[in-house]
Image (cartoon, rainbow, N blue to C red):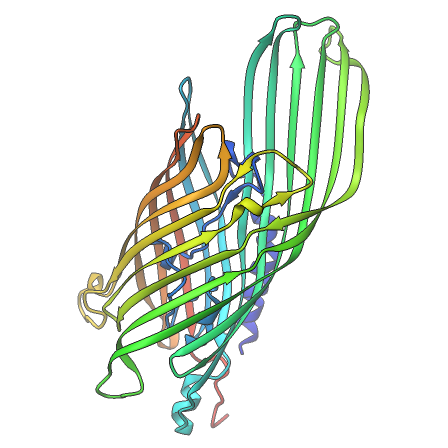
Length: 447
């Protein structure tokens, strides 16, 4: 394994937390629950609906079903970033916002080099793969101001601010016998979110402002398992052990689990505004530090299928279910109601001619898809349903030593909210890079 490649990955991993921690996210609904959920998909899968249950590829990672690691034939490093435009509309106001950040970092590789098998003339039915991934799990970021009045106190201004999120660092391992693979993903969910609210009574006497701030730290062990199986319809003429056309069935999920969280709280009231705008006195009504709470996460299940023609066509669909009605966050109880949710998606990837010599656009991977996702949070009388379309392209790159890699793009357009007081129309662009290196673990014959 190359030391330089490992150092590059370690550098990205060490800086990712600071990059993700920047307050670059803005969504009024992220104040509820653990924040806005981040859909699990890399740019290569996001282009055709975000399907991950049945996806596996020799040169692309899919850590969201750990069984896919066993199908890798090269060491693969993937990284991505995104930019998102959101237009929020309510009955009285409209607002636009741009956000962006790192999207994912991942490294995976087979535990035996394919070139060695060819040189040694060995063809084992057993294959092994492993990988490491760092992805955001939920995102918190909002800044909302509301002006209202009360008969006895006059006008007041309420402000709500929040930032932070949770992230998942996971190690996955998989083994495959012939065309059936099983994998397990062992991860650590961690993060911090800050929630702050303040109310200023400007017309009352004496004037006062009350401020409450909650800091929640989350950390805990999470896991999931996955299975993928190929039904081979046609094999390559040159090598009958390699499939040319097949259908993959995949399933992945995890059970309901509890993780820990700690919370720090402070509630302060300032009274008696002076001429310089400062408040003459302050009362600390609540001060808590390091209070421990339990957090209950739901069971998840994702299943799908994909029909594949090698280097030509890939299309499929998938279904997902999560029982968020059991979700419990004792550190911030009753901030919203939660419901069980489902998700459906479908898409297609097409390559006109992967060996075209003089027409590069024929070697590009074109992707199209659609999705319908339910959000577990219930806010008011509406539902946060997400419906959207996507398309993307995978541009093949030939690097030194004829290493095949890809520049990935994905474009998603959709609308979040049905019957809600605030509706979001969004456009999201994801740019990713897939780097493949077939010489990792290569056993050289001559030095």
